[in-house]
Image 1 (cartoon, rainbow, N blue to C red):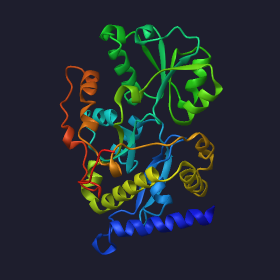
Image 2: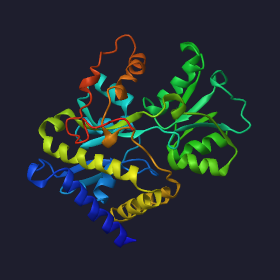
Image 3: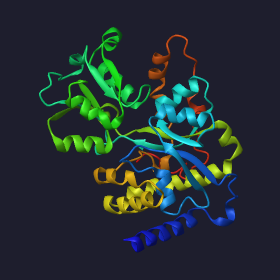
Image 4: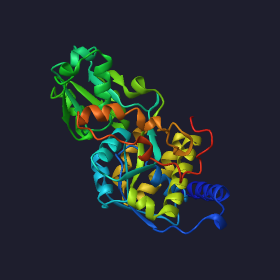
Length: 337
């Protein structure tokens, strides 16, 4: 298996060399990128790019595990990490609050195969949005995708603002949300990735809705650097974004077992062996645009949600200033997949 992985990486490097000739590339300003690992059970595109040999000479330095998008954004905005991965609505919130951040590539979308699900117990009386009035919903963090999805579901179910306020969001570690549902501590559980697969296998639960039913095939999250980092390190960003874009396309083109084998070896050799077990439940993931090109609507669709959360004193946000495709070699090609 190791020889197969080495052969994949070698071929991938050749493909990358064809895309960006060495003679045309300037040296990166920074060679080490600090980051927090993403949630267990998902493949991080930056790590996959490293595993496939696309990232060199850049190196990744893991400084912990990202507990939630908003927290990750704060670390990047304050220079404690070089990049973060977060829900686009959370990025708008952070920028509106004064954080100087810039999204450089899309990294997660929703699809029929990869949707965050909202689950109730099989015998629950909750059958629709109105049944959630007075109930508790378990989410992994506030101000992020799960928060926004619950709000959207309630709105589409006809609940007015006062009625929506009667639905309480309870923040729990992602690994504990299913247990809280089964023990009756919450009435609705938001589950994703391997947590969702395991819960389904155990049975006794019923899906109320998922984010693909709400939004369709759209990019939901992005990789973000501080605006200062982007201004000072354009060649580092050009190389990094190009490598991530190529990893996105590699994952789209290769079968599940091959992707898991490559990523599993990477985790084991980079001190993340504890994350390997979650890969058995990995069903795939997607980015809606080629190479992670960001579309304006990836952010614009969350503008009203952000303004509603911030209230009447909400600071206007220039959506087009939040992201850039300037470093992405896939820009200008057919973007929507």
